[in-house]
Image 1: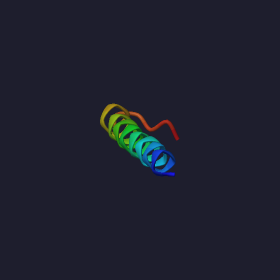
Image 2: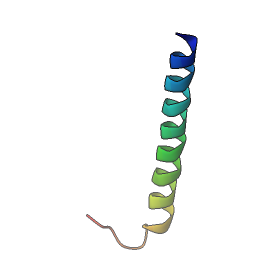
Image 3: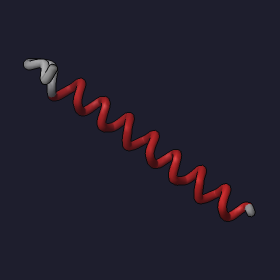
Image 4: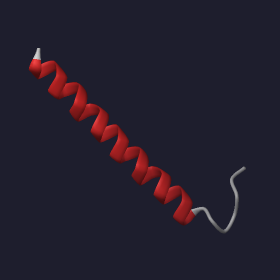
Length: 36
């Protein structure tokens, strides 16, 4: 049971970090022209 929880927490942390990096990169490099 603990191994499952460790895996879930690790995957969620990786997803959170990846999302923060993507959001920061999109804000930093896409400031000049809006893709919207």
